[in-house]
Amino acid sequence: MRAAIFNGPHSVEVGERPDPVISAPTDAVVRVVLSCVCGSDLWYYRGDSPHDLGPIGHEFIGVVDEVGPEVRGIAKGDFVIAPFVYCDGTCANCLAGVTSQCVQGGGFGNHGIDGGQGEAVRVPLAGSTLVRVPGSGHSDETMRSLLALSDVMCTGHHAAVSAGVKPGSVVAVVGDGAVGLCGVIAAQRLGAARIIALSRNPSRQKLATAFGAEEHLVIHDAIQEVDRALIQHMTRPENHGAIQGAIDYLTDALLSHLAYEEQELVEPLARFGF
Ligand SMILES: [Zn+2]
Image (cartoon, rainbow, N blue to C red; front, top):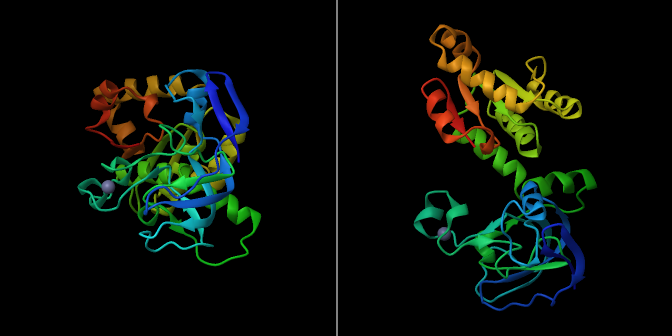
């Protein structure tokens, strides 16, 4: 089959990989229908983070081609969403809802596991990993939305949930990339009364507005300046009231924007999620 191959920083090309086959009874083989590039793939591309040479990609949806004899709940022909990690669904971490930390789990597109940026993927622990999509004949637009559920929307939702967003919350979303924008959508879904999207990119500001940050959008020239201003306000007692009124819950959808030491400073005033 054809698949994207990571040859090292600044080198990704389409190449040949072996066709995936069932190698464990809990495996499934999924024919990829749509796949996309994650921001973290760009870290590997730039050489910012390590990545094994070989397949790449961990965001995909597809159709199940084959299942092993011990796969439950998923059958040949099912249309499925693959989360960016596979999991057993039974370990303590999975039972606590933190399937990304499954003791038997792992990520796609690294450490010898097929990548989502290819024609097909062997999915380990398929019954507890793949999410079946009901119905058929989905529009292209719906398909693209479903693809977002393989990683980016779940990550934005995780940020909002772990920030404790609830009906009436005031939420600041730091970062306007795909995850940040999904954080806006998630905060809106969870009933936030006010969503402040911190953005420096006009086209992304428009999206943030469309997703629910309208008329509450605060625009700064640079995220770095936003971070600096936020910390200054929060660490000067005379400004605590003002900033606290504006930001009850701070959703840091892009963790890297605030260092842990900075988070400690603002935590008494706002709750973080990422
Ligand atoms: Zn597990």
